[in-house]
Image (cartoon, rainbow, N blue to C red; front, side):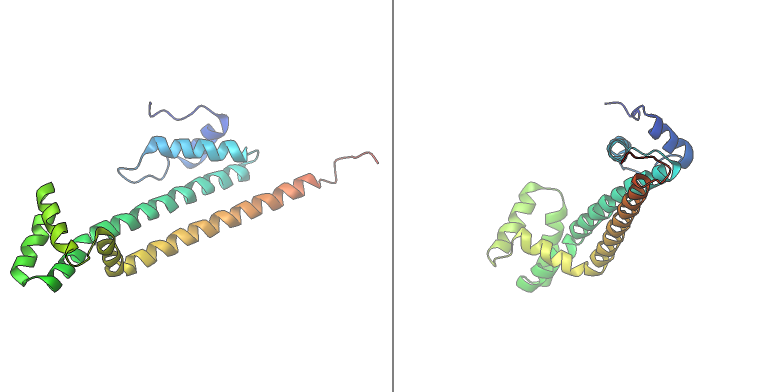
Length: 178
C-alpha cells in the first residue's frame, strides 16, 4: 500500500487548512490517513467548522491511541525494575542482579531460566506486569488522564455537532407544507 492519502475534496481541504498531520517519529502516516478518511466519510463535513470538528475528532482519537500505546510501553519499560524487585526478594543480591541481566540479554534460554526460577515462587509474567504497572503508576495515571481528556473532548465535539445539525434541521427559512 502506498503512502498516498485518499483522494477527496474534504481531505484536500483539511490538508490545505491544517497542514500535515501531527505525527511523531515512527507513527504510521498511512494509518492516520485511513482514520482521517473514515472519520471524514462518517461526518461528511459541509462547512469549514465541520472540517475543523472532523480534524479535531481525528487528532483526539489519534492521541488517545498514542497515549494507550505509551502506557503499555511504560509497563514494558518497568519490567526490569519489577523483575529486579522479585529476584531480590527470592535470591541473593549478586545472583539476582545477574538473573535480571540474563533475562534482558535477548537469549530465549536466559529468559526461560529466569521465568522458571520465578515460577517456583508463583511469580508469572502477569505478576511482573502488575508490579511494573504499580512501579510506574504515576506515569500510567498521567496517561489515563490524557486519554480521558481526549475522550471528553471528542464527546463534546460530537454533542456540539449534533446540536448544530438539529439547528440546521429547524431552519425557519425552509418552507414546509401543512
